[in-house]
Image 1: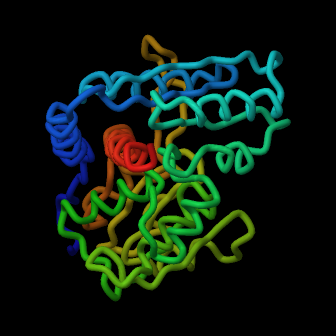
Image 2 (image 1 turned 180 degrees about the vertical axis):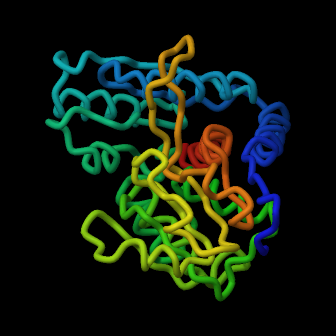
Amino acid sequence: MSASNDSQILSGKPVAQAILEQVRSQVLALKGRPPCVVFIRVGNDPASVSYVKQKQEKATWVGIKSILKVFDANGIDEAGLLQEIQKLNQDSSVDGILVQAPLPNSMDFAKIASAIQPEKDVDGFGVINCGRLQQNLPCIVPCTPAGIIELLKFYHISTVGKHVVIVNRSMIVGQPLATLLLKNTPQGNATVTICHSKTEYLQAVTREADILILACGKPAFFDRSFVKEGAVVIDVGISRVPSDNERGYRLQGDADSQSLKGYVAGYTPVPGGVGPMTVAMLMKNTLNCYHLCQLHS
């Protein structure tokens, strides 16, 4: 891709819809009970409430049964949450378990995620799935990185030989995405740089990117001074910023999209870019977990 007067808007909606329709047809063709996923939420973080609601709505649409378990942040500790997960691990009617981040500071998210049985780990955050991903073995791939790969594929954006800069080092986005992009596959074979809060001369590094992936929660921080002309920008960041509308806020990505229009080759909108992809890949992962659980039953 190259820059033009009209940068391509890389909407995730058509890509996500195609994946959801595929999952829906496969669920309808199943014999017996539908797949079942349990969402666990600790506390009432507004963003978490919204995200889980979206996930449940899509689960219903594709024919997946979803159950929501909500715990008061002051009413359950880490040991209690681990006990709840163990019960779900042993429940043969449950195929997938998702613990919505963030958790209270008193809980170790990595420990909680790794307590989920690997074949029920729909988020792919547990130590077994993370390790299998690193070793290029079959596994459940985290939803957002998997969704970004599908998005690039859909829009015929080649990563082969390209310099991809990821501004995120988390196990949710940055690390698994880097692993996928480094693989010897048609959607891999990239040269990958990971940036983070301690990166010196960040602007100089991001300006080297053919594909820039942003996920650091700094609304509209990255304007064209951080981006090479003609690059592709994938914006994973999503923040609530004050607005005069009914809700009192609007959603804003890490990229200053107004600054990038006509300067970059393409960029994902916020909302409507990576977000729908994450939810669609979660539904695909849940169906995969259903088949894995059937094999292990």
